[in-house]
Length: 315
Image 1: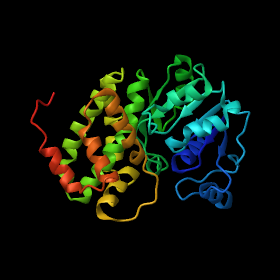
Image 2: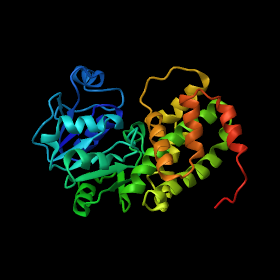
Image 3: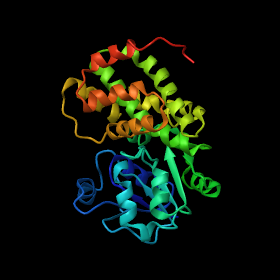
């Protein structure tokens, strides 16, 4: 199968490595001038994965791919699809990012349908896993979901292997919202680490999942999705792992250390507050993260404020 991976960052380069390992004919696309692509051109490695010569590196999007696997920053998806609409339209797209659009709160599959048409075949590939662990042979479980049942089945057949056990998603709304929101919870976890309150991570996991479940339900999804691989199932990799960009970013915000890697939760929390306004569902953890990131609230005071909220039943 001819597979083009769009995006040559940490996750995109892994997906190219993984698709090649499964025997697909792989191209990795990155923009001219991309530091990631330049590193691959020089050495075939980014320090995490090494791509064999048979993986094509290109700054010109191939038009003959049978599947496009997209892994870029979520806020750039609409522009990417519009720029290459003629190439993408009608071809299966697999969205391997976790985010929501700022200003609208729209899911990424919705953006694809708006730009390319309602008939565009789109799937999402989400769930836990870090490049550093996969390349050491440590397996994990993930989810592929789509409104197109045939596409969903085809994608799982195409990408299932010894490293990844896939589950069939049954709730595109819940899976996309849950996957995006877990990055915000990851930032909250990092902030707790930064103020030496890591013991609260258990409570964060429980209440964070409940918060997201209520939102998913209000948006028309199945709230049980929040307790699956898209959200709760991804917490270990997001809240505790030393490889988690979002957790590390949250910790650095609190301690004042510089951090220059992409942390999707920084953008997603703004989109979640858009959804809070649209649905009326209270998102206290998300709002606290927003206040710390954008209003420069003190992290310890934000935790204290959550503790002072009115008492209520757990469920």
